Length: 61
Image 1 (cartoon, helix red, strand yellow):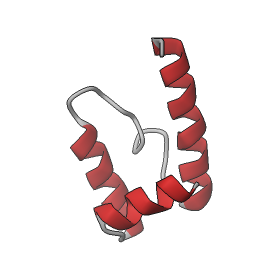
Image 2: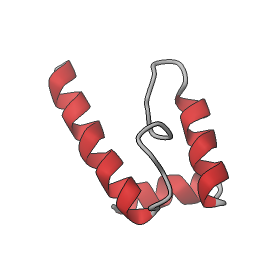
Image 3: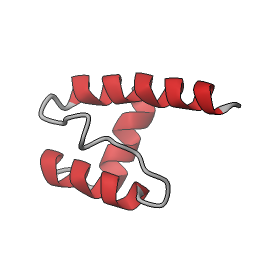
């Protein structure tokens, strides 16, 4: 998988996540290498869901 394909897949997933939880912004879902836990922490704070609940919901999208 090349970088363009990976970014395209993440952009599509971000759109689905924002549809599921409308109060999340692009800034909340900005993925930076090495800071994945920080990003998921922001999602947890805004949604009130556990990390496992979020990952399950994202997998179901």
